[in-house]
Image (cartoon, rainbow, N blue to C red; front, side, top):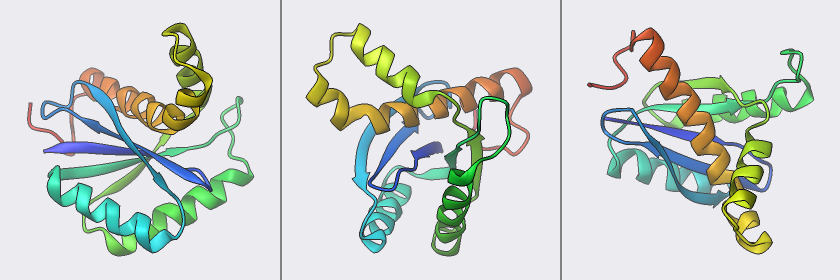
Length: 147
């Protein structure tokens, strides 16, 4: 089983997936956020094709750890997913992931146009890798992955 991560945005949603041992995250695609029904259809396909056992959604927080206005939109997004996807959905702190993704791609020499196309899925991979690293430290209490 694998874990899928989503970096929600009002225009684009970045998608990343874990390997089968839940050790490494990799970006896989960016999906248009609208129409939502098309996004949801693609998400269902990914869950089925990739045998996803858990979805992680990046939850925006302020630098001090508190929640801001964007949190409400992400929570509504999570609730909408939970209505149509029959697997667990969790949120995970996404502070500064887009900044990290941007810096990483710049250091790799990725051109500006390519960065714009890949930033959301790269941020999703950073969110997922953070979650996977926490499983390594704490173990996998919910049995999300079979190591």
